[in-house]
Length: 233
Image 1: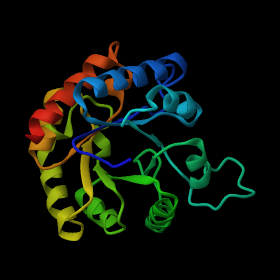
Image 2: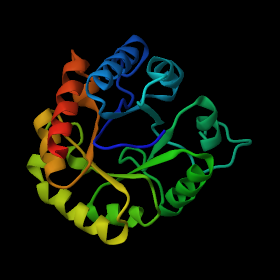
Image 3: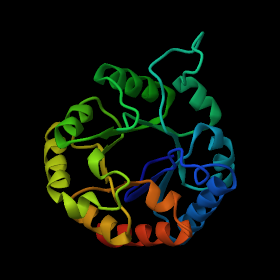
């Protein structure tokens, strides 16, 4: 399945009870409905325990399901580790790497990006600052998402509080990689935040609590998707 833009990527994280069970299914069902109505590229990253059920909800759509992390290990005697081969077998199309809540060494990111390519998995690599975004872009991931960690989960969007982070990220990343898709995240809460982020040069957003903890995820996802489409025009 080919990546399209704009992108609304939803990281379920591990909020309880929001990210699990029937709540996770509801988010996936709402995302499917928004995709059917808008055609916007949506990526869902549920906890490992919910991957199979979310994949079932979005089958026969262009919605992509990513794992939230992978470990830089070969399969084998690796208790508690998640190798890329296991994720591929589970049916996901990609993986998030180096989220600020689950950091990796640059050498490990490089290993995972190369291994994922061989397995046909997309990689979304997170970065905390523009310079890190440029550094990981050299490794050739499919997507880079720049998220200042101090704004994550605050409801204060990076596109409003620190627009220079977005513009600097785009400038630095494009110097080393002209093809990587650039997303931004941290505090993205509304369609307006998404519009501004794309206006500043990105191709979409990585969102978590604003959707996962919402009473009505459908309304938030729809607002973000519609604003993403408008901004891209």
